[in-house]
Amino acid sequence: MTTMTTNTTTTTPGGADETGQTAPRGRPRSQKAHKAVLDAAAELLLDQGLSAVSMDAVAKRAGVSKATIYRWWPTKETLALDALYTEWDTTRTQPRDTGSVRGDLLALLRPWARRAGSRPYARVIAALLTEVHTDPAFADEYRQRVVEPRREQARTVFHRAIDRREIPADTNIEVALDLLYGPLYHRLLHGHAPLGDRFVKDVVDMALRGIERPADASPRRTDNPRRGRSR
Image (cartoon, rainbow, N blue to C red; front, top):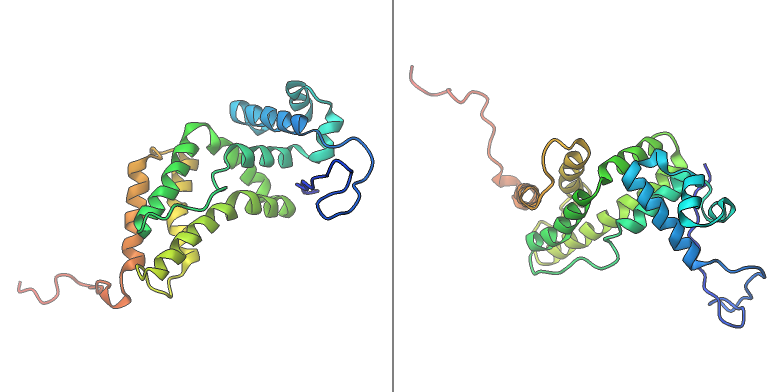
């Protein structure tokens, strides 16, 4: 599959882009049409699911031609991914620095969970994951647009915590990220229980207990808890 492109080079009134090179002649990209397509795709995606995001349906709802859509997105999957990224983008700012790793993680993850539970994102993500596991090129786009931005924000939080000496310097941050996002996505995708603030707090607290605990403070395993007792 051909991956989508997101080149947004701007041009000056004289026809040169920001690099000083002359832009090619022709009709410039219509930002209004671009936004209309993304909005239409997001509405269809969240209201009816990925199967409803056909180029015909999006073109009709956005008031543009199919040729306009294909000029920017080669497939409905790449369009849906871009629409999801735009609709659910909570990664444009640096994560808040509250002064503690626990506070930072709660400030990062609670808005994410609230947003995820506000609309049927689970259905959308599940459909996109099917494509991820069948198309390596699309999988790269998905990880770049959906997975990595959120993981990078949490990495920033853990690096701050190391600088504050709240967690060990040799903390495996990638595993720590999975300890946090794994339960959240599990509950989001399976829908067996609410994805609420209380659950986010419990996940953060349990993960930090394991991350903050020194290795020699781990409880020793006892194979036979009755050993040594008199009968």
